[in-house]
Amino acid sequence: MNEIKKNKLLIIGASGHGKVVADIAFKLNKWQRIAFLDDDESLKVSLGLDVVGTLKDMHTCIDDWDMFVAIGKNSLRETIQLKLEAQAATIPVLIHPQAIIGKDVEISKGTVIMAGSVINSSTVIGKGSIINTGSTVDHDNLIENFVHISPGVHIAGTVKIGHGSWLGIGSIVSNNVKIIKNTILGAGSVVIKDINEPGVYIGIPARRIKDGENFDFS
Ligand SMILES: CC(=O)SCCNC(=O)CCNC(=O)[C@H](O)C(C)(C)COP(=O)(O)OP(=O)(O)OC[C@H]1O[C@@H](n2cnc3c(N)ncnc32)[C@H](O)[C@@H]1OP(=O)(O)O
Image (cartoon, rainbow, N blue to C red; front, side, top):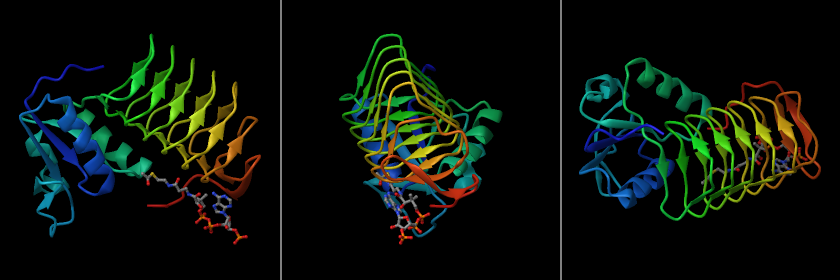
């Protein structure tokens, strides 16, 4: 986890997800100032915090602010975080004080762990991922980069979730299962065997309803 070096945090994205991220940052009590950037120029304040500019201002802020991308759409979050990394921005990990993190867990920059989540031992979570409210990620998992684990998801032991995947609210993944990159699981679906083809999967057991990997559910 990277060290926090600056006393201001700039959150990119001021809508619903951004507000939850800001709330976590508040609770961590590590920054003297927290503000947003957002491309909605009509938005001046969100959660009582200033929206100080749009994304085109991002590069001018990197020297003075820690930066965190709070955009729910995985591909857009990835694009922006990679731009920030290319400019050597400081990107923290945000872990809600009421999340439970086991021993030997690794979490990379730009990932947020929300309230009530449990990450068990020896799990590795890549960069730019969202482990949303009340989800559980059990032991020895590998959650790759820019994944979104929605609220109330349960992932059993020794599971791999591929880059850019989105697990919908309340979905379940059985132990020892591998899910290929850019997979979307619908709300409440249950995965009991490997998913080797990207696409949209729903139901119990999960079945594919759409092929491919370029879906826009934003
Ligand atoms: C804090 C937060 O808010 S985090 C965000 C949490 N949000 C989520 O988790 C949302 C998850 N999204 C879903 O479940 C969506 O329904 C998706 C992504 C699976 C599918 O979306 P789309 O591709 O637009 O599918 P669409 O709505 O056209 O549905 C296609 C069919 O699948 C069915 N279907 C869609 N989702 C599901 C589901 N989760 N379970 C069962 N059936 C489903 C639809 O009823 C429809 O059936 P029909 O053809 O018989 O009418």
